[in-house]
Length: 102
Image (cartoon, rainbow, N blue to C red; front, side, top):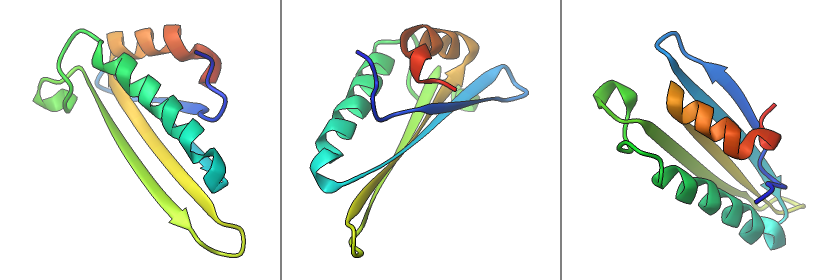
């Protein structure tokens, strides 16, 4: 699956971990397409060997999603997805979604 809405920035921690952050702001009629991409990323991550949870508590990966609506003159929905984990998770993420990482 090629991601059309999510573009991830990558940052590394000092503890051999990494974090991918994406922000997508779309008109309400495109929100379902963005959510489908997020669901695909999270479904892929759920199949990664190792538990979901904070690395400092023994997890291999963790994700955080924030969705908000701006009902101003031009309604928009914002999706902020942060997903990261141990080095092996980050390497696998780049292999799977590398075209969407800047």
